[in-house]
Image (tube, rainbow, N blue to C red):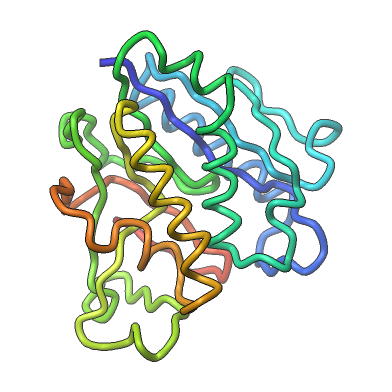
Length: 225
């Protein structure tokens, strides 16, 4: 089955974005993201969804397809989670995505720029006919990743999905778009984040215990799933 990787990237954020990394560091991290995809899945089509401030004049990566997103979608008025959902929704609704997926069902991966496929990544672990993700209890996570969410979500266990890497078959795009819209609609009402909402109450997920994704969060903590 053909494989499409969507790399969400914001190499140059506008004012008000908190990160321990400089623009140049973010750029090199995303280059590493791309190189690990090429190494692990040589035949994959790679599309970088670049939402930097003034991206067309500042950001370009060689050997991949660049799809520029209006930076206003990640304006500081939105949460990071809503911004991510809007970026993905914009591309999945685009004519270009339709052209890539209209001939046959393909595996669509979303990977966050600056994270990378590590030695544990194995394409054979992913079911090409299902949504693939890793479900974690943040209170018993070996990475000690406690997401910043409202009190109603801090019960024990606190279940959410890892969103730095997941996949879905392209014939489930319409369903996946409903999940993105749910994230966009629900977060302003109840808070929390995309990790808690995107696959909440979704049945028949293919849970992968070890995704093979690593990277350093914007606050500086290294994680591996």
